[in-house]
Length: 74
Ligand code: SF4
Picture 1 (cartoon, rainbow, N blue to C red):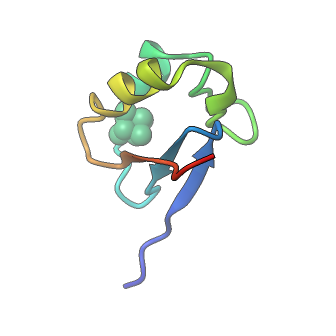
Picture 2 (picture 1 turned 45 degrees about the vertical axis):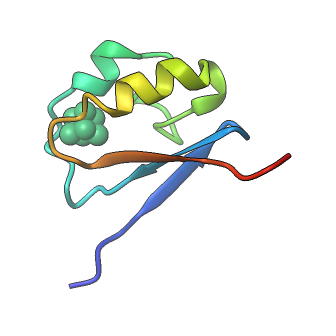
């Protein structure tokens, strides 16, 4: 089965979200609601926070649905 991967970036860091893996635990949108808001589209808006805060929150995702990488250069 091919898993879906969505990407969202603030230009510095890119958040990867795998909807198939997400357990909808709400940890991300309780912890950093300015970025993670399931009522909005897109529901992840990394331009609303700092790279450090985003990385810290991504690491708290209990299911492994969220991950990140640093963008190259620029
Ligand atoms: S913290 Fe992870 S598992 Fe929980 S809602 Fe966010 S993406 Fe999904």
